[in-house]
Image (cartoon, rainbow, N blue to C red; front, side, top):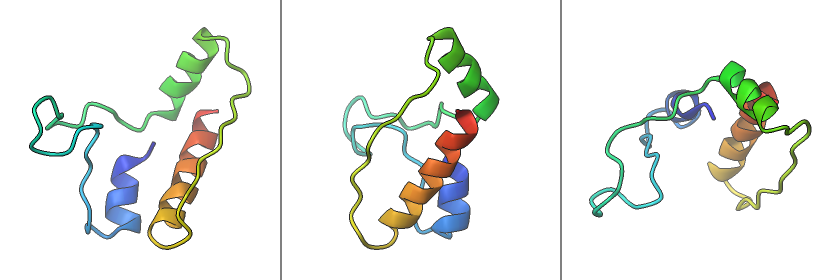
Length: 81
């Protein structure tokens, strides 16, 4: 997923990248950003796993910025296959 593109381009710096399920400040929450947007690497990982055509459903609240973020995620996932 293009975390930086979403944060900088779509959300104009109103949010920050946080790649942890746990909220900032909770014990065990990540304070770094280990995941990077790399569609080529995603394709390799999917191929190694034998996944040729993955589909999933994402429920999104029908208001900004959630729709825009979901569309960006869709485009990012498409690049990775």
